[in-house]
Image (cartoon, rainbow, N blue to C red; front, side, top):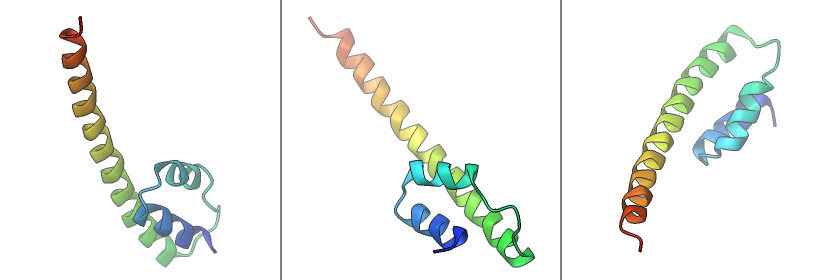
Length: 71
C-alpha cells in the first residue's frame, strides 16, 4: 500500500496515531496530483484533530465539574 492510500485509510478510520506517523514520514517525492490530493487530505486530518480536541475539552470540563463535587 502506498503512502497516499495508507493516509486515506487512516483518515477514514480516524486513526490519529497512524495519521500523525504518516505526516511525520511522508515520501520525499510526490507527483503534482499526489501533492494536490495530499493537501486536501491534510485539511481533513486537521479538522479531525480539531474536532477530537474539542471533544476532549468537553470531557475534561465534565471531569473537572465532577471532581469539584467529589467528597
